[in-house]
Image 1 (cartoon, rainbow, N blue to C red):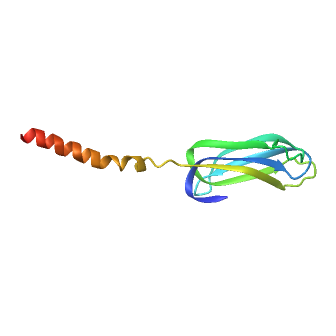
Image 2: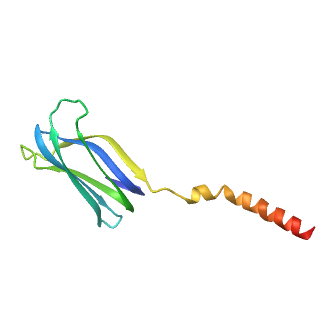
Image 3: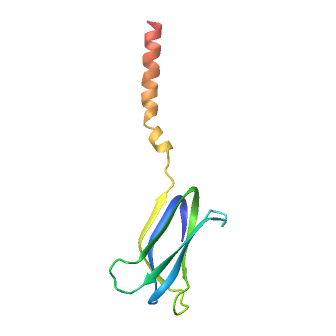
Length: 118
C-alpha cells in the first residue's frame, strides 16, 4: 500500500488463509523505497471468526509512505492472507495549531505599542 501523505504508524489484524501456524511480517518504506522498519510475529490461523487474528503494527519516528504486509511459514506454502481493522497514523501537522495564534500575537503587539506611546 502506498500513500500520498506521510505516516508514522500502521497496523492490522492479519491471518493466513490456511489453518495452522504462520509468520506475519510488516515492512515500512520511505518515499524512495528504502526500508524504514520491519516487524514479524508468529500467529495461528483457525478460521473460527472469533477475533483471534493477531494484530501486527509499528509506530516509527521516521515517517514512511509505503506499507507491505506478508505471511510466510504457512502449512500449505500459500502466501494468501486476510486483514481486518486496518489502522494508520498520519504525521501530525504542528503548523495547523499555530496559525490561530497569529491574530492573538498581533493584538498583544498593538496593546504593547499603545501602552508604550501613552
